[in-house]
Image 1 (tube, rainbow, N blue to C red):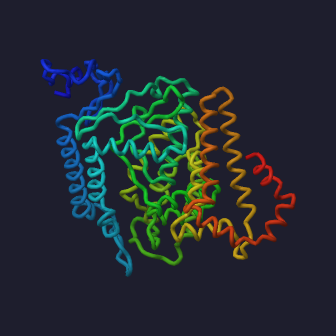
Image 2 (tube, one colour; image 1 turned 45 degrees about the vertical axis):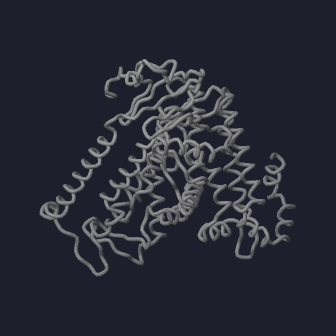
Image 3 (cartoon, rainbow, N blue to C red; image 1 turned 90 degrees about the vertical axis):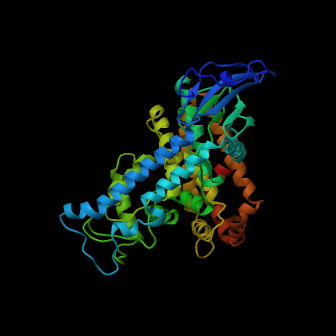
Length: 471
């Protein structure tokens, strides 16, 4: 019975024959709803973590999913038969108007969301898939230099062996080590979201460790998120728009990634139906978004504040969705942000994501991404938009200065920042010679060289030249 915390899987092994492990803990060192982890030593001396799935794991998953579906059906019946009787006034039917129920059908319905989450969680039951995810995640982020995962020793569908990691969890770290751990975890996940498209969906404290060599170690790869290139580019544009307080760009990014409908749907009150109104488009939504973001605590620094703005300030009159693909991403970044804020109250998750958002924007592959990239870099006359470049450099410099301030007493955090900056510089430099840099090379071929020479010889270019010399 794996529900017994003192249960040891070795008790099921025929002790008259050769044992698989020389030693194994009598009780689990970590437990979760679907499995338990034990520490063991193989006969060859290798220390491993042994993850064993509970025999009733599938039943637990099926039971949870059925409970959610039952609640969903009950809510649907309430909305259809009871709520109209209690409502003071039903939405007035207008030509071209849609009810809430009509807009939230198919893949956007609560039932579809429940099914999507259940399918994602079901993947956790195959430890062979988890082993493959671990290797893929580590390889995808090798360029960072500070992120790793345990090496897989052996995997079956219900038992997973990985190397034992010599490291500590957040609760065992001092303040500076904890700050380094959370910063690295946030950077790894933001780089995943906008660069690799393969994101760890459950980065809570138990699934993160600080390796003795200073790297961040991610554990447990049963639950992962995949982001396609269209949404990666949309998220990158949104991060840059938010940090630069370009609310129109942020709003357009929301449309691109599916948070806001296209065409945009609006209503003046909850008593009206949703409809397309030429007087309420992306510009008007951007104005309301700006006001809400600036008046909400943490609006331009906290991911949780953005969720509050969308759900409470925007969604009553603008049709806003949470696409099923983004549910696990929300979980990822709310979890990380909570960890980071407990150590550093001034932590800004968007500033941590900015370097990787810039890198993604410099290597667009979609038609929309290439168009936005050219508009950001060049004017209609193919002259470089110098002020925007200087603004990006200023944001990068401010981020580095913030790191320097924090790292006066922390060599670990400082080393992490150095690795991050080196990885970013190498990634951007490599664009010019790679297929990912096709849009950048095309833009450079169209640049007005006379304008470049004139600008570089002007006083306004001094910050740009100083940055280049510093690199």
